[in-house]
Length: 157
Image (cartoon, rainbow, N blue to C red; front, side, top):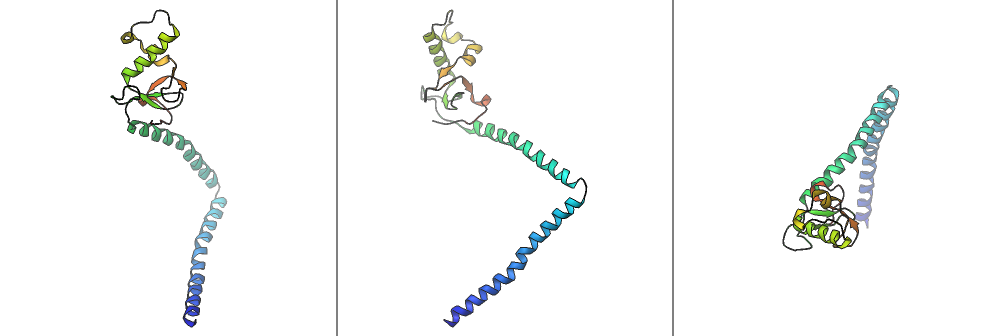
């Protein structure tokens, strides 16, 4: 019992010795804040730095999303042979390769009864990029956008 009491008093002495050391940094922070308030223009410089940091954050986030999109890879959900390289813009699913994209767009245009529809191999870029197609995974409507041009979160199946 005496040993336990001695240990408890030793820990209380250590805690009381470390308490002033912990209070010292907060006192120095308060002194720096008071000095900054006393210097004209220091507060505006600090607020300008904060504004710059907040404006740079969305650009950094966007660059991180684009970098992550380049690293994503999975197989095409339609043919299960090629690497998927197109994202459904409505939901963000990485769904198909170039050949299957062409098939999905052609099937959609053919189902609609588009007049003057060319052969599947002759579909123009405007038709491929502008046709709204149902996502093969969740059936949400959207265009099939190249992974490198898609801005948003990409979901792998």
